[in-house]
Image 1: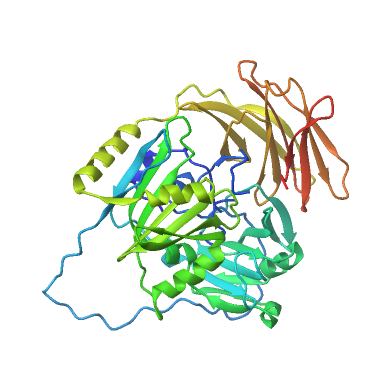
Image 2: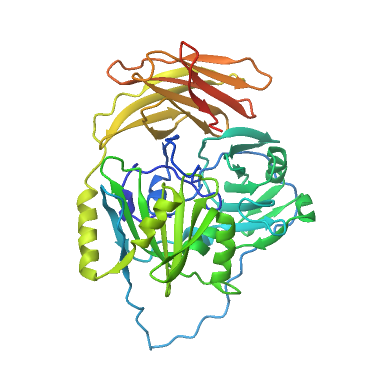
Length: 492
């Protein structure tokens, strides 16, 4: 879902996520300074393909039942050839006026890869439902998805299926898992309980032709209303992408994507787009850009990430950023077409700025916590710190996997779920507190208290972590010696 050129921009963006798409990862309109993950799909987020994409690994065999596909089969009759080749229309180049201090970090125009063709999608809803009204769920499957991890989640068990579950303050829930055959699945929902989402996940089966349910009790009040992948319907087939970031915080990006309406099997693509926008965005705000009708809102499941989008002739223009909707509308209204000479200058600037990369002064990775889980298997969590521009990046590693967070000036707690365990990761700036403890509370189990560890006296922060195999929701807090709660998870 990204291009080779974008690979030069390494590890500089939050793992913003799209519950409709292929995790972004994951998830008040204002950015309150919550956990910032720089995960394996960072580059995809950078170039605007915001998607969940990280899944957990599970086992077990599906029930024997026929699998139907919603994908339209390609025609078997070859199209007639012609010698009259019509040149494609000249591409219109776009630019924006980003916030003060931002500059072009990436600018590319080409037919970007479209991996959505491998993704199956279904949206089921009750009558008159929308993003935050009624009841609905969507299922996205991606064959061949590797076993990875999901952030800001807790782990649930559905038979042999390990499910990473996350919930937002606005009532949306996202379940991520891998079913036999290495098919990655993301279920986004509104108005659904954890138990019903586990029941739905446990009833799924998939193969190369699509997916189906062995238990379809939900059809009594939910109807299938779309099989069009929402990000493809909203943003179209991308042909141009521009990314602006401040030099002091490369994870804070304004992304402008220019796309073309995708082909559809039946019905106009604009109908798919309207349905997708109805369920993709919350707090929708209509506005205009140079006489074009536009809409802006926060992406469901990502209450701090907003997008604005509109049609400009045959082009779809989409702007996304971690800013309030009102600020994004101001940025969107600055988007305008530019001549080729200006576009060439933007590309030159981006090429120069891509030389900014992480320094090589990363500290050694040292153990923060270790133990033995309920299955008598040992685990170890390690951490190291590096610099990326003016930012500090914390790299956490566990069970042959790793992910990174941006170090903040406040205490923070992050959670990670893989196919075996839940990992709770916390860091604490020395300026906030010289000492503290990580408190973990799980239903039916004794509380766990983990002191913060000074793994490197040269660093300006200390660390605490814990891992466990038991499924279910939990809470965690960073507590100072005087009882002050410095950070909580979940931050509801």
